[in-house]
Amino acid sequence: MERLTTYEIFISLIKAGLKVTIQVTFFAAILALVLGFISGLARMSRHRTIRFISGVYIEVFRGTSLLVQLFWIYFALPMMGIRLSALTAGVLAIGLNYGAYCSEVVRSAIQNVPVGQTEACIALNMTKTQRMVKVIIPQAFVMMLPNLGNQLIELLKSTSLVSMITLTDLTYQANILNATTFETTKVYTMLLVIYFIIGLPLSKGVKLLEAKVSEGRV
Image (cartoon, rainbow, N blue to C red; front, side, top):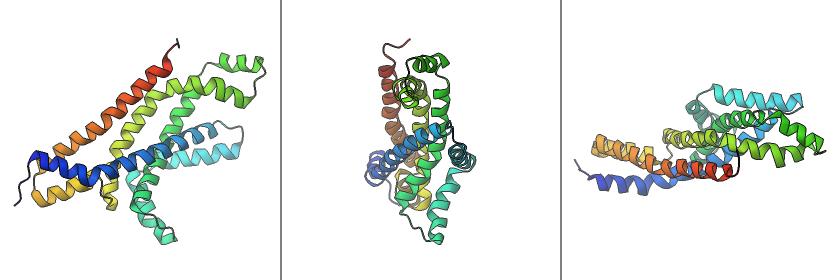
């Protein structure tokens, strides 16, 4: 039985799985943030149809398991003639799922902006678009940053699920190493360390951004 050192396990995981994990995290995060802002704003639309569509999307993806969503996109869609690569399916499932959660963060932050701000904008004869872009969203963005940061950290950790559809991310490679070496403690300890190393800059970056946009605000 081959015995690997801690360093060899670390390098094996980095070489084989890190790129895929970062790719899934990056593209899923972009999709989640875009969908979060769009559906969060749509949830407050004056048009009932838009609110309904947004509401259905949010409730479906928040109310069902991410793993089931991943399986459905990767295994069920091909039966309907829609075939996606494992990477695309992983990005789509995670992005759609966390987009639903981000939408509630966006909606809540916008609704928490003091009503006086809107009234002042109306008094200045600003259009609704001008109010949202120049006054409401900038103030809401400061409030939503901490929760959005938490969602991005959770999104990173959820990328481990893509190993279930044979995508060779960090977790998939860890499972392969464990099956071939039986170095269970070393393999999964290194996996924890690597996820922590990836997540730490993300967490610190959000805090720095939060401090930056909060400068000069009471």
